[in-house]
Length: 446
Image 1 (cartoon, rainbow, N blue to C red):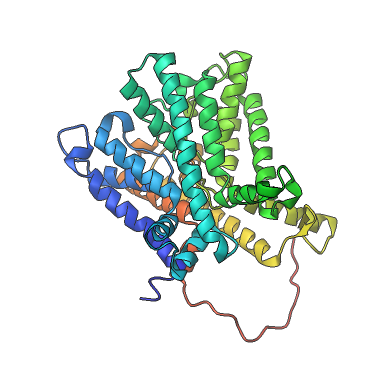
Image 2 (cartoon, one colour):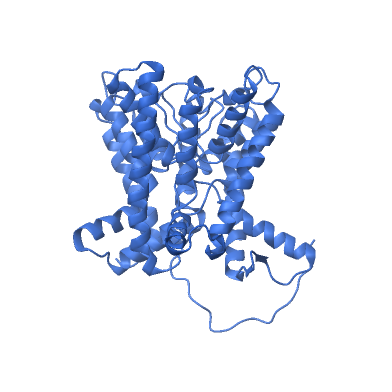
């Protein structure tokens, strides 16, 4: 029993349990708008995509699923965005006033909080920020859809709420068959969604740090933790750099940004840069992107967002540590440093491990998917990275994949949400510190 309840294994099993429950509910006839319940594969794929906040779909969410089914999908990606162990911590706070130590350990692993004392505070922050952000964005979207598009109040409210929750949790699900394409030039729709995506995807430890430092030292960024500084700096760089690169690649592409005005091009490129890293919404036809933009999306989707948030990928902080490590090695420095701090050797090893394991998963997944389908390699790579990075974007081939290909994508989505290290730790329990060390030697590198 103690092995089963190991924090790493509990995190992996928590997401798996939510997927099983979601699959069973979505198979009910009431969840589908058609006469019968959804097939097992459709229900399973949708449940995995929702719990793992990915957003990939094999059917049109708005027409295939009933109102009850759509509500269940929204509940699944809301829970997936919270995190299974974070939800358990919140439950413990509500029932007992304080979560148990084991629950704290599980939540600490899932949320990547630095200390057990921060677990309850981060859990409370997750609850407050999540619902406050979702309510505000939902209200803004509802008003815009009601007065800008003359939708009935009920339809506008449901669409606003669904897309607000989907944006904040970085789930990428939409009840529109074209995602956000119909709002391509509407800043009053896209900008609030971009804000929700960034806030949800930056990571709750960062938000917790910002809240702590703002109480007595408002705007004094020097008091932020190194993790917060790396995440915010990396996020800003990726957002701006991604937008500029997309503008250069798509400026004259008549099938994407080419026919838009300059302000709409800037808005569309900004939305793509934000959504590409993890959110899964698209304001242009992804299948019509240039090869340069597709390659850029590989990079952005693989990196993802901030740690312990609703975003996927190998995380911004991980890549930032690797970049700093390379720069230190090139400069001949013995320490890897940033913002007046030295990055520990353990963090460097973890960053290398995450990127190597993530890259291995993408390579193996690509080879496996190529073996069962005849679609072009660039589209296959796109789908694999999108699934693993919880980005949810698609070139349009996901519904056409064979059952084996769709099942492979569900495995990639699960790996991407749970995390390669967490899953590996859940499978290999019993690691211990060795009482001895071997003699050191230096193999030739490069």
